[in-house]
Length: 262
Length: 265
Image (tube, each protein chain N blue to C red):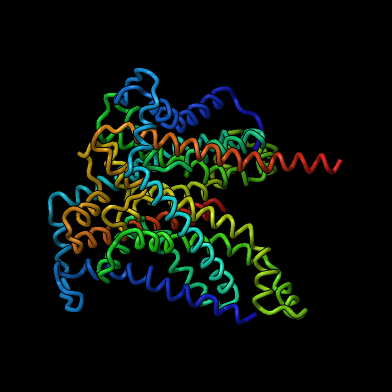
């Protein structure tokens, strides 16, 4: 039986080459000067200095974060009530609605986003508003399904008990249902915020080319401009910001969970 | 939770579903439009379907998408399953290390994973194209396969494999005849996840492919600059195929169930 443990070694080698090395190369490129040969590194912080001293780049970063935060908030505001109503349906109808929400997710994201172009052409909306529609459209299903999963796991006896102990509907919701479903909201935030920060085809397809986000910057520096060092430093900045926000979200989740024990 | 929904709650749910289906219905309708317009439906025609099937670039991109998804699914399912079995028998530290490394492509934004691959391939002077795209797809699919096989292995009774060995099986036979059949549901769901991840991928493909090789997503992305209703036909066909597959997947088990019940009576 122990011999089976040898079966991991090929993948360990593969993972080092195909996952670890590429990640280290981003870091390496971010901290080196452009145009150097592979073996003569010249380390520098210039790429980061350039990013933060430029009038444009921090603004783009700020816009991406704002877009991701607002998209996440809209997804919670629309997704929570949807999941709540779903959880109240009869079990058979619940299964049907879950299937109906998952079905469009099987269709290519680009194809679905492209489809909005024709519809949104009927409305006099700004490029930014169109990008918001596309963002919420793509990420709302993830939020709904996460919150629904946590709501449907709640033991109905807890709600009955709350009512028996004299809590009205609002109190039951605030003191019992909401705290128990917060873990779903937190994993929903992870699934919405993370891809929303780095999204670059939604602004390109719906924003009319005027709306530049951090993901578009990275794409430009890698594919059009060919300045991989600066592109790497931008993606490193983005990755660090995402890591920090994930950490804060998780801490928040633990904090609220503890606060409810009192 | 209580099973009582009010009328306004049902209307709200219906509106959310309408929001999800509106663009899909719209794209199917306009794939039959008789003119180039994406906002006015002027009449019925099949010209965009004809144009789509006679467009070499589109047909090639469909071919690349399917070929890449099939290869990536087969390889990542086999490698992922073998690795997961190995992980279940290896030291905890090694298992944790592999999980941490697998988290990198799953938690990082796609674009970060993608530029990592791009830097890697180009610094090794590997010409980007179909092969590099497939390699990248295999790399980001394996962690998902491992993730869906691992839980099945955890619930597996270790005595079963021991018993098979005691009864004279070689380790390979024990693996093939005892372990694999029991974790089959995990392997199948892992393969499905891998296939849909690869089939729908855009970001990683964009950065790892080379000139002349594009999948469906890259084609759609590259041709949005001008009005191109053949994309509506392409999208509509994707919608038809997925709808048919999902209906079959959901209906066949129901029919089987019914047959079983009949035979049982």
